[in-house]
Length: 116
Image (tube, one colour):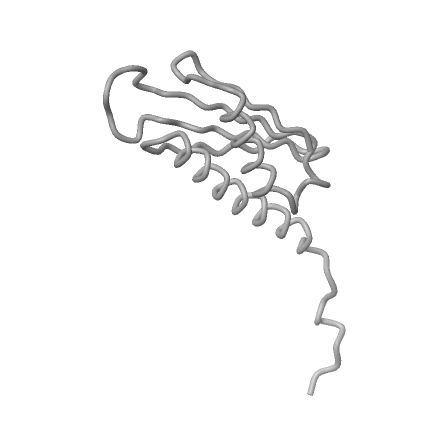
């Protein structure tokens, strides 16, 4: 699973931030690493220099092998809140999606069982 971190113009990015975000996303999505080819992280400050609450945004785009990408977005007062929230949301989404794929229709039927 490859993780790519991208930042908007209003976000001051440094090596420490990139490593921190990458480590958190990798830790969060580790159990899906064999099913994901790539995860793209987009960090942005929607208000730029202007004050405002919940103006930091993190969008995660995960690409499951052989499937369409899935996307979640989370806003927070800080970049950390934004990417932590997005990581939680993506974990929940992927858990649900992969669980549903394992429990598809067409399983064994109870209709063939003898009645009482």
